[in-house]
Image 1 (cartoon, helix red, strand yellow):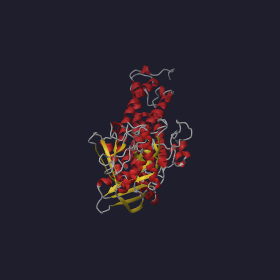
Image 2 (spheres, helix red, strand yellow):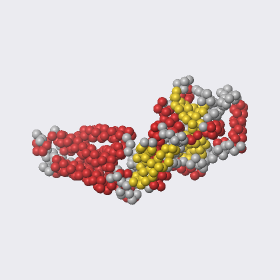
Image 3 (spheres, one colour):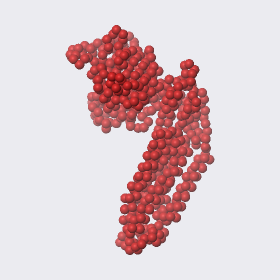
Image 4 (cartoon, helix red, strand yellow):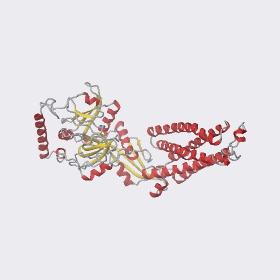
Length: 575
């Protein structure tokens, strides 16, 4: 860690809003009729903006509601940076999937059909069947009451099961001819990319190349390397990317299991009139119904008609919110009329969440920046010094107590505390440099509280050693037997603390989440220090005559431990 810190030339952590100041932006909603916005839409807007400015929960950025306004405070950044960060609200976009692969190459999938487990394969019939309710993820099918135009037969994406090969080829030619006519009339928005002939990738190793065997037709070459290098297992996964609707995009799925190359946006979220979650009366499964506005209905009908007969994954239409794919269902047939239904293995919670994302992904509210101002630190250098002084005094008290009570053995606790302090500081610096971590007062409080947690681990181990010595065992044997019992107690205690920190981190926001993060971090450091430093150091000291002979200043002398049998003192050979 010290070497990485030196290489990055990062020796001082960045400070949070209360210690370094930053920029505060107040966003005021604008509604078409001038009425107050709904509480639901405001709450969802707060959540989307909070994910953007503080997705990991450790940057100390704050997003809160103040009446009907949203106040965003970002530490350590100037006005221009913050305006760029929050000035454009998240927007939902519909994009055709051009290529897809698992988040990591060790999750092997067939290269001839690189659809991950998170996306269902195209079905052979558009009619409702059990496949919809048993698929792992949503598939799109038209709503039963709005599938066809008045007087027209219901459109079909694929031939009937009994169709002959000649009928299938004829249907394919008709669909291709219709798409070409649409492009010739200037109505197509994909420049014919959806209908281009497949062009397989050059020969490559499927084990290392996620695009091996995939159709690269129409994909911008500059995106191929970006797609190969993208790691969707990371926590950020591109969250908050302001994607350009007129350009192709490389993105991750919301759950981090898949990565995509997506075509230009064909329908924008502003064209979604509404989305609701409900139970299908026929199948009893949860579904999401989506309604489009007039122009959006035309665009949606056009793109679904173009891609429905294409091979996977190009027959998928991804829904991208804030740079992340929230769903990439397979299109089973052309969907005219501006009404669609997303079905799959939904629960009430997941269906409602997807409906909210589709309904409010573009944020039905427009915001204007009513104020943008740079703010100074609310605490400043004096409070920072006070917090560090409190932590230093607490550390000194623990050191004094250890030396008075454990005497020579206290050297182990003091050394371990020193190692834990150094590792904690280096961790904070590296997180600040590479993960956007900003040190604030709640973090400092969490680090100070952890001093007691770390000291508890030493005390548990030392007292176990004393118990074994009182039972008449030699020091070397006592050290090993005590460790077997003490490590279980230490692990259980630290596990309880860590679980509490994790729960608090995910349930809280702002300063409370920062406190939980610091406490969880130091708990992990405590385990590492006790196992990798404290135990080996005690084992080494047990070989010294000063401790093995029970010197009065060692803290392990017989009189101090009140051992009843003096014969248990180690022999010279053992010492």
